[in-house]
Length: 341
Image (cartoon, rainbow, N blue to C red):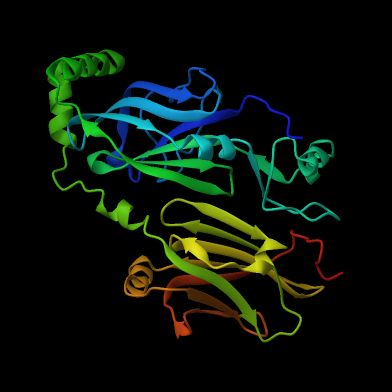
C-alpha cells in the first residue's frame, strides 16, 4: 500500500537565453492541499528547462499558478493564470525515476512513493540509492508570453504543458504591477524607462521554442556487427528541454513513441571485459529538423557502432544523418549488472 505524504519540491524559473530574462512581480502556486507555495525571488536564470539553481523547498501538489512578471525585451507586464492537470500532477509528484542500477536487482523506469522497491533503496547504503524523487516544477518564460512548465527528476524531465500569459492592459492592474516592480528593484521611473528602451527587442519571438515542442513518432536503435555488443544505458536531452534515461530492461523493449527531437545523446556499451565505452552524439539542429519536417508515421534513428568500437554512424530511416560531432570515450567507471566480468 502506498503511504501518502505531502510532496516536497522546489520551484524554478528559467529562460531560453539571457537576453530573454524576466523579473517576478507577484506569484502564487496553488496546491491541492491548500498550502501556499511560490516562485523564487528575483529574475529567471539558466537555460531553457533548467534555472541552474533552486531556493526554499515548497510543499503540496501544484495544481495551478497566478504569476505576474515583467519582460524587458517586450517592455510588458504579463499575467499567467493557469490550472495544471490535477490527476497528472497527483501522479507526477509521487513518481521516483531511476538514474542508476541497483547491484544485483532490476530497476524499474519509475516507482511510486511507498513502493517496496523504493523502500529497499532507502534502507540501503547510499551507493544503492537509484531513484530521484520529484525535485522541482520548472517554469520557462519565452518571448510573447509563452510559458512552458516541466516536472524535473534530475536525469528525467517531463513537459507538463505549454501556456500563454497575457499582457496586462487594465490601467489599475498595470499601475500596481509597475509600482511593485519599481519598489522591488529600487528603480526610479526614469531609470525604468531607460532600461526599457535599452532592453526592448521588437524582433523577440517564441517561434523557435514552439518549434522545439513538435513531437514525432521515432525510436533510437543501437546496432553493431560485433556479436558481443551490449547496450546498457542511454541518456537523451531533447530540444524541448525534456530529458530521459533508458536502462535495462526497458531499454531493450525499445518502444516506438512520440518524442521531441534530440539535442544530445549519451550512451554506454560493452563488447568484452576490457571493452567498455561511452559515446556522445551532438545533433545538428538545422539538419535534424529539416529531415523530420516532411516525414510521418513510425521512424527509426539507427546508431551504428563499428565492430572495433572506433567509429559511429547515425542514420534516419536507413539514410545517413549528418550531426555536429560524435565522440567516443573509454568507460572506466560504470559497471552494470550484466557487464562482462
